[in-house]
Length: 223
Image (cartoon, rainbow, N blue to C red; front, top):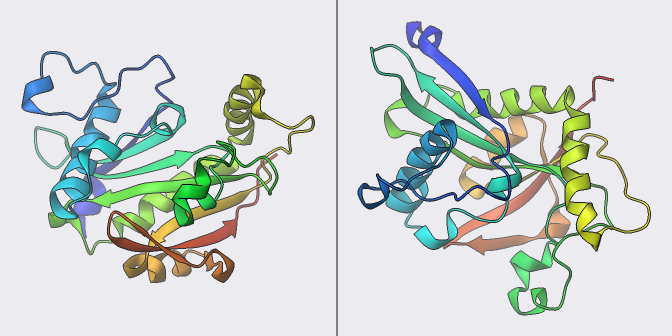
């Protein structure tokens, strides 16, 4: 399809803890200091997750956004480049799974899981309606995985910055290629087609009224 030749992907490095990240809106037009690519990512996320799926606006920007890499897929077929797809890569460490399945117990558990094999997590995958059915979700996942395979050092550095807060064990395990997705059940098949396997031990859980499963795969690191 000719359209695919007009689609370009841009990456937004982690905005950092000092970034004042906000949801783009008419009321924040004069105070929005988001990095440009992140702002485009949020335009898509706001439309898909808040407007379409009715997730809460308050939870859309979370503590992972500032430390994550973000990719935005743009349609450049017209004079104005239009953001049409997004994905986020969260470096290790991740929150313990109990934070999702047992919210009351989460208050007593540590902020991050330093015990299990460290993994990156792909999240916030979203495509604008008129661009669905073109395999763009798959394309974004593959883009993030290909980048991760050759940027293990950057991912480890991001994890080390969290460890420097004093929450890390004496020996921190480096990231060795494990990838996690928390997949909405209706796209479980897409991730399976990309080599992810559902971890039945994680069970199923509800996020914002949408049922999710945990899926893992490995990528071979380019050393």
